Image (cartoon, rainbow, N blue to C red):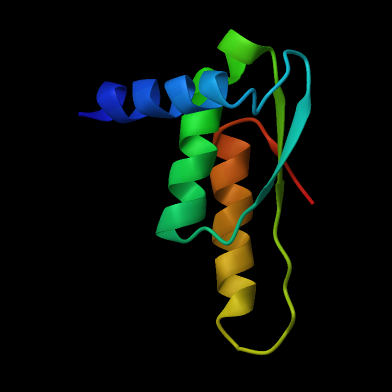
Length: 85
């Protein structure tokens, strides 16, 4: 099923010319399910498009959980050898 989703995303990227080879892509990353799935799919496709992935996490300091969420986001990005800004 995973490869089917990735293929569908790749087909959509191609159909709408969403990514040019060699681009840097900034992903708004909260470490929630949606942004994690997007990041993972783009990470999987990064060699096909020769892209550099950068994740951006914004801690507004509104909830006490954000420090732990940011830590998890940093650990995730480190695992995938990507920058988190």
